[in-house]
Image 1 (cartoon, rainbow, N blue to C red):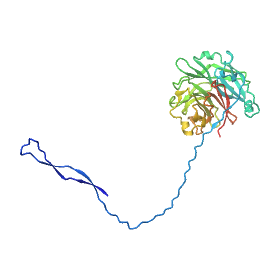
Image 2: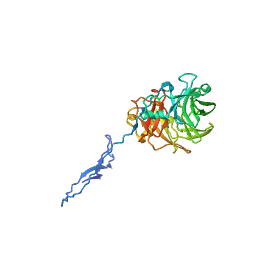
Image 3: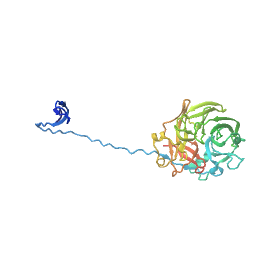
Image 4: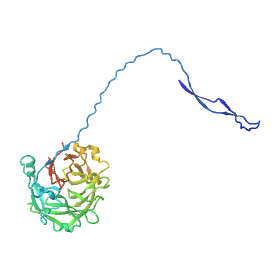
Length: 377
């Protein structure tokens, strides 16, 4: 056993100068000194008791993390002008039993002759079911929008399409000198597909929501009597208050509705289902470095599939819920696409297909692709 004892022994210091007189003064000074002293005591052991205790060992098994599934991409070959990468397909929508493909510049094939393209649903299903292996030939639908490209300053083409019966709605992108703008217009589709005529005298304006270059409105959604226009970038760092602009079907502005933050680009949406839910195309490629978030909340929550863990592009569908209080992400995990060797596919159009999954279309990068994605399990 060790103890610490503090002693104060008197230490006498004689202070005298060499030339001190006989009556020099002597002072006694006490200085504290710390000394360690070890004291040993004998301990008597009277008995030793053996204790036996039963111990149960539980083996802890750590499960391997569940891999995040990615959905395969099945290409549907096209024939005719729509197969040309210059078609730059920028939106998909159903008009009755026809899938409408909207080119960014409908007159790409022949200036002065503008067309949309329509694919019968039956032809698409026949290809996917193996009843046909031939490339699908879309029907050319005349697109009539007199002088619109000259009327809108900085016109940069058409970005989205939606239908309410025979009434069509089109989103336009523009870059006038004072910054990016979007516009929404309405028109009428002839039931026999003999033409879609746009009313160029009436349009709703869509103001920018960020400073991101070359970004405007890429998606339209019909919800009851309202038409909603979605901005392209809604990430937390680039657009702190994302919102969809709302119009009635006469294109009178009726305000905005808040939208959950979503990183990267939102490039198109499906129609609403009976429960008010819809899916949005969500895409990123390396050239959009200004859209890189500090953290992607969807990856943090749901993880990444094998190819998304390996490559930089992001190609996925995310589900939203619409009601009058706002547009919110649901708890349904995103549908991640199998990436193709890290080569980004600029998906610009999406539509549901017959309860089976989704149809997607790219613009010109890397080429025109129409594809089928099955529903997640």
